[in-house]
Length: 401
Image 1 (cartoon, rainbow, N blue to C red):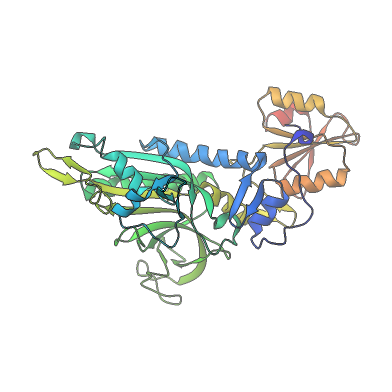
Image 2: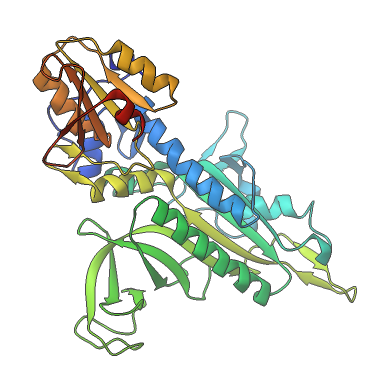
């Protein structure tokens, strides 16, 4: 992609109405555009990052046998009423011009339960798992954390259907392992944390919490083993000993990156979602719900990977692998060779100063910067984002990155 043709522009100054580092850098770098509080447009650079996150999520969801689908964001009142979740404080509710009442989907347990009644009737239909990556809406009063807390956001929500709790527990563990793989591939370190079920279930649930000073949750965790609990339900407090290994327990703010819930029959009961077992007896389907937010993950990545100059994207999600800069010399041949080799490259062919090109390159945060100039001759100056030193390489060496 030629940067002169890219549908975005960088900015030297941070937006005054944003507090979060992720929002400031993503807006300055031309990845997103703020439309209103908690609502953002994803420009071509940002969309490329988002699609790479989604690709990783899809691969791991498909690997555990779940199937992708898409449900409506516009959910009729009748579905919310069945589960007694109409008139919640985080939902957008309204009437259509025709007098019909709707709520914008902030979660889809009701919708998938209603759909499943048409496809699940026998134990032979189970287990079953389906997911979607879809825009969600939440009436968020504290939309001040950039992509970490939005009113409109992208969510991957997975729903599973089972004959009994034992089968649900087996799949529950599979999803936890899949989420751990997703976060590892994204270079995000997170603690598997016990939490309360909130409005979903009375049982303990699990969250993946990223320890960060900008987090709005509080996590109690062990310094030596994997013990971790959300402070809302924590059995111990900072300064106590770990109940698993007797080591020191600490407290830290955390950002919730993913969650898993055992729903049981909470939604199958009001929707009369039943199956016939091997003995011919009718039983309620046992369900699970599992969420991970691609847009929030994008915000987490920027919070974790940045410096005074800008963003430092991990290679797995960077919008491009190489940022090619032409300084007082055309680099068209290098650009064409990289493209032909299938390398993802952003070519800064703009007629601006070298200083501006270098500053924008650091801000955008593409993993490798390749500079072609009179100074480098037939060689190319290569530097990894965040590294102190650069080195001269040939085009063939650049192609082998």
